[in-house]
Length: 343
Image (cartoon, rainbow, N blue to C red):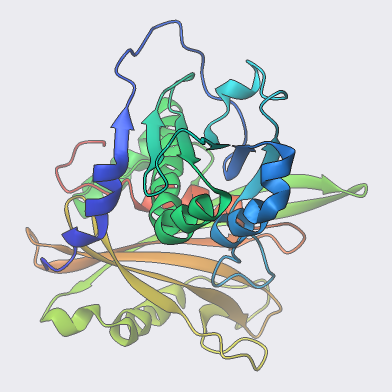
């Protein structure tokens, strides 16, 4: 359970803060998943655009249709106004001929112009040096921005929490979890709860419903083999079978191969509340019904009760992109705490 902490050493060293914390700073603007890139047209057209796209617009794993990880908005320094300075995620790129060839500036700043803002400032003597910086450090920057997007959502959820349901979850599972209003209990049993939120959106004059599920359950812990993806997914299938579909005899299960593609659930080690966790992304479907979508599942060890606790989010949005609906649920998962206090 200790193998994990090295994953976050580099981002912590990279992160620097603007300590002014002026009370007059405005709230950040922009939508979740957006990044503004400030660079001259000549620099942008020199190949930086392709590198930025490779680093930040890779296709997200385990979505039924391709969706880029981030939305990129390019502006020149002349277009970068005071209004744009408030954006949540900003990358400023500049050629600086005064820098030595083997040196560069690569600073990640917090709250530079707005609250809860990240600004990355990159300078080097040549275009090739800037490309090299993004290729070598891009994954760490992506991880940092994703983590901060989750924190922003958690702060938003904390401002408008579903307090009654959060109390039910805390009393039932002896954990703290933050999630927003709008969820309702769809099913509750001894070591399982299914919370459901429905939203409606208009498209071409028609109204469509979007469903976000939160599923929490516990299983016994016998050994570290309980954290293999095969074991976790077996437990998952046993619990989500309790979620019925729209037709008689239909129920939720895991998709282990998607449309004859080599597309299987993917797991990775993560940190949650200072300890080891296993995160699995995949696709779900309804047996005996035409319904499905992506899921994200987080499992970790509850030492106090010697058990595994799993918190999972599922999205059903067949007419819309699913990236941000899934990001909202990911933020809920990573708000999990064992000290019975809200993060």
